[in-house]
Length: 301
Ligand SMILES: *[C@@H]1O[C@H](CO)[C@@H](O)[C@H](O)[C@H]1NC(C)=O
Ligand SMILES: *[C@@H]1O[C@H](CO)[C@@H](O)[C@H](O)[C@H]1NC(C)=O
Image 1 (spheres, helix red, strand yellow):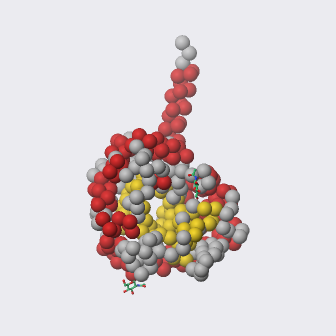
Image 2: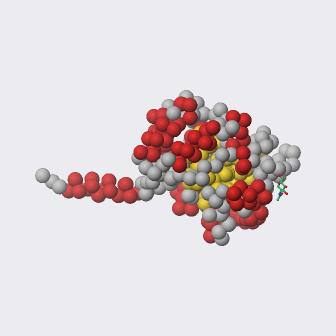
Image 3: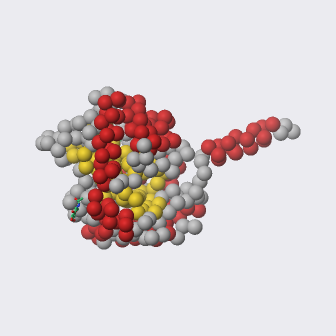
């Protein structure tokens, strides 16, 4: 009997489990806030002291506020609800809760009902402008992190990867932010951009806020788990977070078994955290799923 093939299988399977990265559960809860002008404040959202909470201000956009808005080649400006989510509000929610951190998301879907495009004039000029404008906003608002959520592109994937990768590298090196996430979804005109970024600069990205709510409305638990596996292998070694929307969008809702799927992932040590789009949408029902998600995470061992 030949032992070599058996040894080979053992070596290969050991290697691939190492490649899959250290799999551990985490008690991370994240939520987008401020995109919809619904007067939502940090203090409206329930906070469980046993979980780590990231609020993600939505959005900073490199567009003018004129009508119609036009692209500014990396000169970002805060477009979230600043009346209710200003620098004083950030300071006070962080002072009240040592488990809260605040990030901002770049891009988003639309501005004044028009698509926001990633549209650099050149890699160097975009990166220079983005570093200085984002540094200014991050300092003003006392931010801890940044999220990348461009959804429409007027550039090729390599240009996107270089612009974002160099930006993230500089922001982390200068300690302007301490964590970084990206927010891709399963769409053939979006994923190639994030996969190009991941291939070259994945080591700079702490979390993948995968938009599971961009899947069909009738998504079942087993389909959801399949999507999770597919995206975890796309963003290999990444911490892919699970998500749902409270805006009536698609994917697997809490009513249809979102937390059952989470239990399954947790049993397999694959639950890296939960995020919700969005606090603005949850305000009218009093945040029941924010409470449930945080209680669920708090009970993770
Ligand atoms: C933030 O808004 C509050 C009102 O909610 C106001 O009192 C405070 O001065 C504002 N802070 C900044 C930095 O704009
Ligand atoms: C991808 O998103 C674009 C909008 O950005 C949409 O027009 C297109 O239908 C989507 N494609 C798929 C396969 O969902």
